[in-house]
Image (cartoon, rainbow, N blue to C red; front, side, top):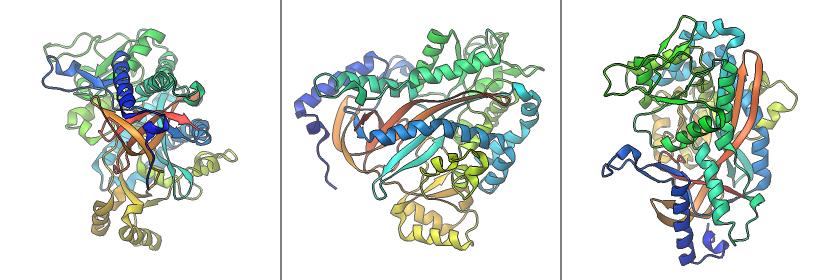
Length: 489
């Protein structure tokens, strides 16, 4: 399918586009739209930065679909919370996946081992969710379908707000774009505000926000925007710690308080600083097996879950966002179990793509869809219980896995969504390329509950990721996509 030039649609020559890209890169560097460079040639490698991968021009997106996705986000927040609170459902649904997926099994074990502490908190138990529901337009059906619902891999909210500001600056100067066609993107304020609300609800003055990070984190600057907003707008200090840091330096007091150092642990210091006298609000645990290279990291996560600190997410919320749960919620009657209000289940199921479990390969229906996927692999995706991009199977790899048949209950089979290809201009490391691209819309949501009381449930901004049309994966941090914003049409 041929696509027109995106630059030509804006009336830009190649020379004009080159100047616009240069302006965009300068703006990005000036305004903190950056990621870590991780260059060994830099004097201080961990502090070297480069502009975030970005789209030089915003992608056109249907206004009606954008507004639909925003409108249902509070309902998806409510769904995550309802599923996470039904721990027996989580265990029963994920049992088959856990038999072949050690990471899921460890998370379930953590859910069980921390249950007594969780129940003991009762009406004081505080949970915070920062979620993102991702969608693609599906050209063959004309539908608008959910790719996944992230409960832990919900990054780039702050940089997404900045890309909106960048595009308002670049295309708002004589290119005929009205500001209202580039919708407001409040993620940079709404996500920190949700964390601050959790801190206030914890009623522990003087606490700090613990941000659990990966060693060598390339996306640290998106996180640093959250830290900056927490301090400037809410007076909250942030402490960055790895899971290993928490295992080594944090403790849980008899009353459930999570005690952490008053300053970041330093490898050059033989002794940790004295504990902070007040417990921190929400830690942010990690989501990949590579984040738990040893038992030390699992000990750190256990320390977090056994404390009374608000967790973003809790292990229950993390499990509620797994692919197996996504597939199970598409079964008849499943949504109604968690969303009994009239019409609520129908609102969400309208976004569901085809989803199939692979627990029983002898089941006639399962055997039929597996045979169909082997015969037509380009119409399906095989997904493990992971978030964060770069984990799915396509094409020949999908066929080989289905034919082998071993451990397939750790996966789900999903309809491959086929968004309409358009032209775009992708910018990485100061260089641009124009070509055929596909885009994915994510809507952020923030949810806060204490005991039975829902304190906050709101849509909180958006993310657009654009990638080359020949790429299956879509993560920005994983190197597949660039940050973009929607030009509503």
